[in-house]
Image (cartoon, rainbow, N blue to C red; front, side, top):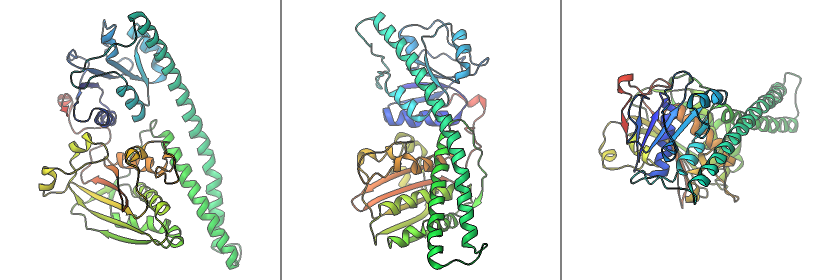
Length: 413
């Protein structure tokens, strides 16, 4: 299957690669194209529409029109329809999430072997009417979803302020700023402070998930030591480790190259991973943290979104290009059907051993690693679960793919 993406947004291209790998395995190729090129040999075209800049295809109708998707902001919808001369178009409103891409790319009736588009419905007229109704319903649902997300972001922003105040006042009392405390009073305040801090972290995670698609967040990259981040994360979850008498082993190898990352974000990802491990590790269980230089084959990762399994080239590679960190616990494993899904936003699976945590902590981890151009995935066995992530030694500037305009037509398989 051949897909052409008319966009200069590398983050969008990365999302398309991951979704195509999930849906079609290895039977696909993604071309970063320009509107002037011939797209007759393309099975599916995705247009990142920019008002006044994007040259729309002309004289498309029927089956040909179904192979084109247009991504645009809601405020550009009227202008787009006027420029296209039709409202019977496949439109996805920005910001487009991976879940939305997966739903629409996976539901196009495309044969990955030859790109054939299968007919829908008993008759052409009925099919076209049904498609038009679905397009309009989809646009309305996207608008409602964006309004809900904006409302949620504003509410959570207001929710964080009183939590910060509670945490601060607890700190003042614990530091004896307002007089000495009895031991039982100190214990209660410490529990209040930990609970307020945890609620603040959850609120912050929900806020980031709400605004991540609308904001381009620049990272404050600097040379850092992952061991320091691990120690800080262990300090934050120390109470839970002591309460369940969980033993922790840490083995962080020196990095052969400087690692560039934003310390606070990587610490947040580690806290979420350790919090997840603490929750599902039984009393007197174990958590193993291991870090080491690693050869990460990005091409393999694109074919298998969360399982960069080693092949012959990986095993024979002598030069690591990233640093990998594993968090392994002795708790109950993850059902195989949910290993890949637990990183999705606001998703969970039934049962008392739901590792997804309602889709907050792990979704934040994935977002943070994607911002660092890395990757996170999970593995499960009878001995427990292992969460791993990689951070590349060399990171490209945000929003660029390392190539100039003349190389925009590179094909990635």
